[in-house]
Amino acid sequence: MPHALSFLFYIYHYLTQQKERKQASTIHALAEELDVPNLPRLVRLFLYDQLLADDEHTSDTVLLTACPRFQG
Image (cartoon, helix red, strand yellow):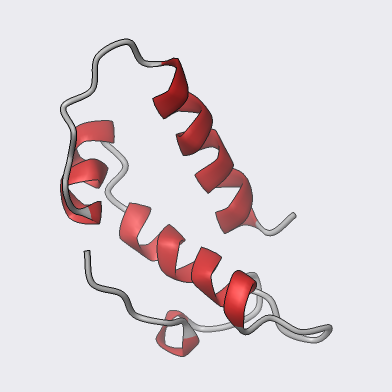
């Protein structure tokens, strides 16, 4: 499992275990709330794996500039 996907799974698990959340409305606010400053980068890597990865290229082998951008 690529690193970005496993870390995002960890974040999902962490969030589902929380009784109270601040309800961040953007990825940057969520990164701050969770104290995970590289969360936007991890989301881009995850998107690459979901949308563009093939047998030769995964988020572990591409530059961040090759990963999809997102708003949010």
